[in-house]
Amino acid sequence: MKTIGYLGPQGTFTELAVKGLFKEGSHLPFSTIPACMDAVANKEADLAVVPLENAIEGSVNLSMDYLIHKHTLPIIGEIVVPIEQHLLVAPSMADKWKECTEIYSHPHAIAQCHDFLNKELPGSDLQYTNSTGAAAKKVLEESDRPIAAIANELAAQKYGLVIAQKNIHDYVNNHTKFVILKRPETSFQVSSSLKTGEKTTLMVTLPSDYSGALHQVLSAFAWRKLNLSKIESRPMKTGLGNYFFVIDVDQAMDEVLIPGVVQELEALGCGVRVLGSYPCFSLQNVEEGAKNPVPK
Image (cartoon, rainbow, N blue to C red; front, side, top):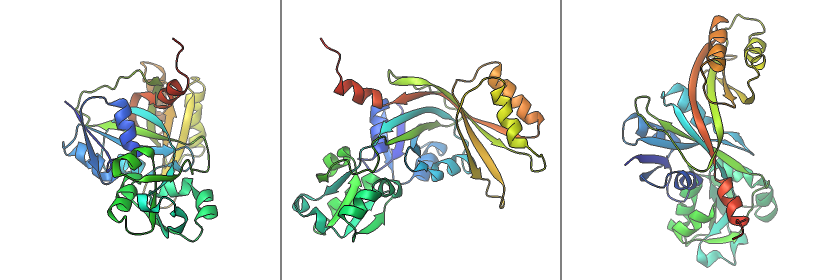
């Protein structure tokens, strides 16, 4: 039985992703994203599920940087989860939520609810936590204080809190992408009826003295008609102006096209690392099926 580490505590969106994809196995929460990855690297867990990108706030840089600079953990799957942020309070504050003086949540969650907070709770003090689940747990532990958390419905259920205001996020189309990581030597494949496609992710570093190198990199994909769904730069942490690029290709690793890209880029003097070739899943399919059931 596999052990799946995730960003905890209980009640986080990461736990929702884990529960949606892994019906079996032991689910083990960790307090931080690095702790999740360390657990896999140190063989305390078989897999790790961590957030990588939000549709509103962009990439979770801590996940990406730790994946690049700290551990070589292949990506073996991706799952997209619809995000609905709610304002949670202790039962005693259900009718007095506007009196809350402190709001706790993950930085991304607070940023996703900027308009609501400015309009409804303009004088509140915003406090950052490692996860939305940790924020909900904080409200439970200090239920005698006028504080609130931004988190999901699962967190409200786990910690006995009341949803004072539902769907307080600024944008309707709010989703977060999570990735599943494993040790290189571990043999494991993710399969589910929630599958939506395949993807290959590459990390590319450019030669510092090559003019037009990024154009050459993109051309290597373009003439092979490989569709790129994402290209993002991140600092190498070796000095100003030094970057690597993370590129998502909308297909699985094959025997000709993507290996051909790698060979061409290496011939240009680029460094190339395949971060993973993996199936993609979505919990959106589950929600849509629940809202629009098949007629009997």
